[in-house]
Image 1 (cartoon, rainbow, N blue to C red):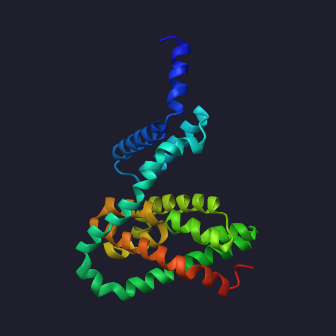
Image 2 (spheres, one colour):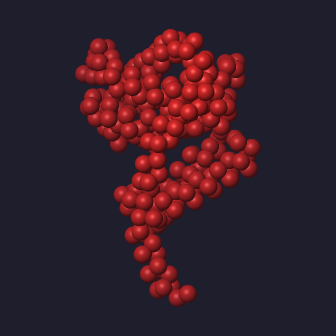
Image 3 (cartoon, rainbow, N blue to C red):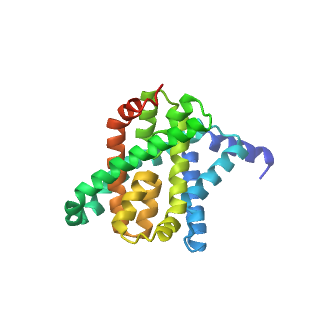
Length: 243
């Protein structure tokens, strides 16, 4: 096919909303194949690889993120139903949850408090600006909620979104080795820890390990989002970290 014909086709495809959706699905499919081929190595988590492939594609083709997201937003929309669907495996763990509701609630509250306060204090000690410190506070909460919290307390939602993704990827990569190092074997405990610290990406990794771990991770992710939205702004203000 003549070069001019290929250029015309590419101009049409790059302007089509379906391009973003197609590229996203292809990138994740390739990333998942690499992950399986590497014996499910956490260093090659599909999300990490897919994000890298997509960034490279957008840079090479000079397609703006806004144009890409016109098609990819369908995948973004499915995050809602996927999150609601986490109730199904959680329901199967209901008898155990009834016994553990108090320690689970205390663990979630403690986790979000320590995670937020420690990140802000460390960033302050390293000389980060106040806005950057505040943007760090909700980094372990699922992205839509984290961005809303960040905007409310004076942070940068765009920076918070990047930090949320980085936190989730890091948690998914190192969690398995860290649990072994700490000799933690209970899947419900590991799930709670994963959900508090690594939100949706960590929960996806937890389901790959066991249904029980995934169910408790999904619960911790949801509770973390709720507690953070309600309590985090007041907690930071109480500790004097918003000024």
